[in-house]
Length: 88
Image (cartoon, helix red, strand yellow):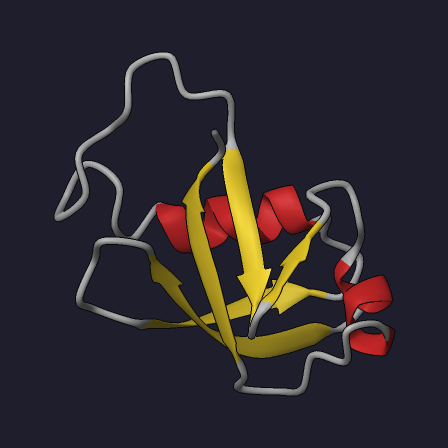
């Protein structure tokens, strides 16, 4: 359990955020920590949304993986960009 800094941006928002997440967080928790800064402010809430989609670089990451797993594969580094969007 350690804090890990990432840049997060919600798809459709123009403001990125520096977010401290925990290495034990699931990618769903990481998505929630990023989304709280955008959804309902500059990004409208989506009615009936089933959750988030998480993308690291060109790779879409399964929402149930932990951050510590993502550090290994696909190899997330400190201050790297994580893009969040609505799940289909």
